[in-house]
Image (cartoon, rainbow, N blue to C red; front, side, top):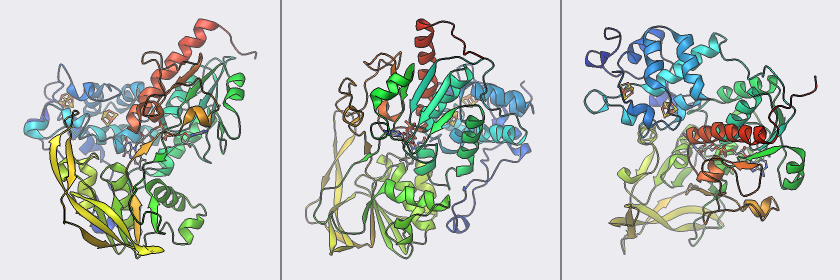
Length: 478
Ligand code: FAD
Ligand code: SF4
Ligand code: SF4
């Protein structure tokens, strides 16, 4: 092992090539190129095969990273894929969009002196190779079971649960109010981070494995929650969080001020070839406009970079804290800077200006004060520091809260936390309603794809245990 691994002392970190900012500003294609085989092998060999791999400890899926790096370095890619797929339902997606700087790579022990192993890029490479070579198979069960499971929400949590349960032979029915499966993977996250074909090919496999998708079907509107419970032996709720936080400032009702997810969904639909009237009318198109995005998280970064690609005249990101305190991934901030986004840190909107339509944002400078009980520094406005930014399109990206699910489902027995997220037993993922499980953002609050996958996988195991306890062996009639 020693000759092949531990190459970090000799080999420098070399992530896959990033397309030049001028080139990537002009299209919505992913910005990182693929690893060539030799580069992936060489980069995997930099791993020092730690006895206690902090990379795995800090991966929400506890992926067996050192093992699949070693197998890659040895050219044993099919085995590397099997090890990687054993703990991750969508390794090719996590390899693209996990904030690795905060998770696996940020905790790689060689990071301090030698720069981390490029874990995410190798993970993506392994699974893309597996797709090319036909190793990724639909989750077709060997034996059918009679019990059926209803899953509400076809985002990463719902799909990860569906995949596991189908493999076990359950009749799996996924309900989603959208017309495509994928949740935020399809309609939130832009193409330049995650091309949609990557999600759609998984969906194709799930359909071919017999998972039933009931799309354009909102639970609580088209089918009642009670009817769904009567239809299935267990339910998994994975509806995500979609209530956009708002800004209450003078002028906030002016035309040309839009919520981030409306803006991103329109852009994603346009890229998918759908007819999008709000895009065609120009209401959700940044072309030629002076754009101001309010917020500093990943959603804000996706908005600013989308506006650049749509041909905005200028794009400014207004964030009330400083760069070091931005909640999003630093890698995405850097990408946005390279692509020409203007960052105005330590500033918040005081008013939107205009007559009927927005023409500017009045912002006020902020300063960082003492930390609050969570350790986060408070912000306060600096009196007399207001300034105006010309603006034709303002995008609000201030985060999301859950909708009132007990009301939407007509089920007051569903308990929620004070933040509106669903309360579940942390071990069993079950809500207070027997046979109703929940996971992903609707339980955690706005989080990450990798955590949604983890919840979906773990909850599926708990659903199986629940069904087994009721009816250990009930195979479907042939
Ligand atoms: P979702 O993906 O939100 O899926 C929920 C699904 O439930 C949706 O399809 C919705 O239509 C459906 N649904 C809701 N209510 C009903 C109902 N009543 N009936 C039927 N269906 C219903 N995370 C990362 O790790 N990396 C990133 O780069 C990243 N970028 C992001 C960018 C944006 C713009 C946003 C908004 C989020 C981003 N995230 C990112 C977060 C990540 O997308 C979420 O944490 C993750 O998608 C949550 O998965 P989920 O399955 O719980 O919910
Ligand atoms: Fe890193 Fe995410 Fe992959 Fe885990 S799933 S190894 S955190 S990229
Ligand atoms: Fe390899 Fe870094 Fe993980 Fe150690 S922490 S096993 S060096 S990837």
